[in-house]
Length: 273
Length: 268
Image (cartoon, rainbow over all chains, first blue to last red; front, side, top):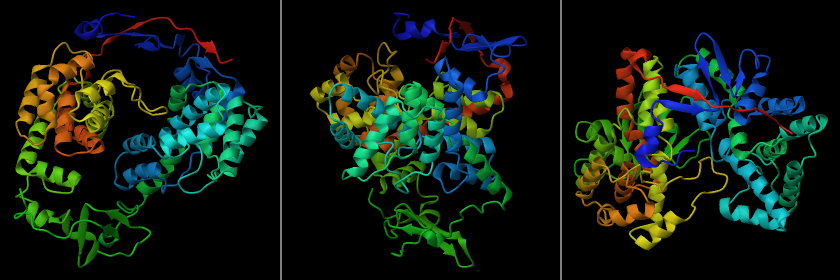
């Protein structure tokens, strides 16, 4: 690692990138994290390659099947969902599919769902497990998190308290022998404490998935990057349907359906300057 | 203004429209915070007055509008060496869509190194520390990162240039110009305490830092300042993306990669 600072540090990097990750040799071959993509990694399943790219680690068939399912079970072709609606509005507005879906994935980094919650959920589990190992009571960990964020990421849900995805992903984890990890057990304990306590919150999909992936061994940043395409498969159907309808007909809003709560009419020219 | 809540209605304090008599989906008149946009503002209001009105709910004073316009000029083009403009040019140079070039500029210009979130953090610091040098000393020296955030930990004091040697001339010029509008106390305080602030941050003030202080002086919140910083830097990104398009990728630097070894691990 260079000890340079300031402009010397920048000068050291002009035009050249030293990379562990890979490069391509036009007309010849591609190196992907130290391996020839077409000769050594060509039989890889796409998700396997995706998580290999993130972690530089290989995963068992069971782990990959669970990671596949984590994406599959949360792919909802429902354009009411805010991120999906962005893709569909792009279709209705006759934008391109790439722009619509890229923007939809970008807004999936929300604070009440998606990546914002996912990062908080896995960080909370990792921190709580460490604190419990240090002798702190689970209830105190929960109270501390509530004081910081006023909610527990992975518990409760914007629309309803309970999650239709959880029994299915937990059943699969059971079938794969992956439902006894320490983080999943901790997540269950947290749910029990929250549900039987005054908070009355159940675990949602973000909570269970964070625990399952923490048990697989991904760090918060690895988990965050792994989840990027989580909602993707639910977006294209909405785009297609909106693009096939007459233009501008997805959720049209008449003027009267805008509930105005601001200032009454006032003149511009005589305003105070 | 109806008090009746409809399940499909949108609530807003910003915008009211009156429908044409023969089409409930076409506006006959639009009002922004009460001002008739097409009937009165159009042709009379400046772009920056509209901008200020949208965010702050009130029309700006003349000095505030002048200051926002000056800031908009300062931020309009970060130049082709800036990462966000570089990203936009990556779109332009290969014929990507116009929107994708702007999305690229927004994504890259959103960060904590010279980007929108840096302005957000710097404005949060102004809200916490104000003109108290000791409060700044504490704030800069402590870890202000929230665990579990999607944003990485700051690697330098927000609003300062970690690779700078001294305050860059355009930063000084911007600071001097904006402080001259006398719209608040923070920019002039920053001018007077620049050396002390830079010593605490261990690096010189950046343009994002001058912008953050200016936006704070104009009364914008950190959320609003972040949005405005993203918005006001787009013109240059757009122009550079368009300029690169006919030049093509052959005249755009491709760079080189030197591979260093890496071995995969089993996940056990």
